[in-house]
Length: 420
Image (cartoon, rainbow, N blue to C red; front, side):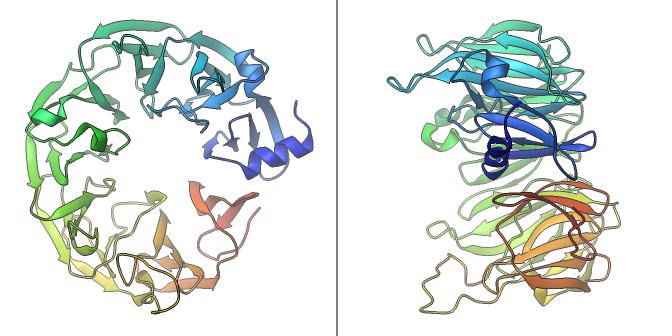
């Protein structure tokens, strides 16, 4: 058990938060704790999980290892990764995946792995799919991990894998040669990643632009691939391409929202300045367009039901029909004042930072305010000066869990009151 000062350090350096049962898991590279509305319910250090005195936690979802920490929620198990940093060579050694009991932090299993690894963000049928890389031979192996027992199954492959995503009880793998515009997208299971379908994709980019990018997004019945400034949507059941947006306009696709709708942002290729955006249905139909040059980058998108509209520019639209329901100036920040020393590609920006139930949480960095907006009516519920830097990491009912610099805060999204 760590002392109080170490626990506070853990909270201050938190890099990941999630609700597991009734607690929040807070992580940094040396320790982890679980806490609800009060003191920590349990803590565990990287040294305890790994067995090495100077071990650090690693992110099992990150291809390029750093000292960032991370975990994957797997029912009543929390899966993480730990290793030893050789500060002379900069390499990581003795890396192991580990499963912790979410109720008390007990190490249920520890599985050594060879080389670096990159795992799915979610569990399918009680298993994770990871890819491991031998640093000396650069050989790739697909690794299936049983999250209850830690048992692994290794499958050597000649795939060059660039993305692995788990969503909607399936695994999606992107592999191929991006510099030859020869990519393949597979859907399957952890044990058989191409069991359902395989689609060849005529898209590409330079290798240096591929690594570290969010290429593949799968959520709410939508599959979207972003490569080289182009975006393509796929039918989730068959793998058939349903829509494509390509050059000469550069673009970006945000994560799919409830109902499989996605926001496609059109940008100036040289300045990355937002020009316009559109709302695209899962079948490729363009439901709505706007020339309001802002986008809303959400920490969390958790609408209560399909009747809650989706935000595009300064307005809210029906996510099924694309009908505009209301507009609000609160969704757009004030223009940056010339000479203020603050610069951005756009004069204005979108203010929505999270959707929780039927409320949009707003943060206006120019006006230095935060607030709540009723998504069903467009009415502002509350507003106040920004009190601290934060990101919304989880939500339970109308309470959003926000990670501040030195604390976790439970916020009632309809009133703005701190619940805990």
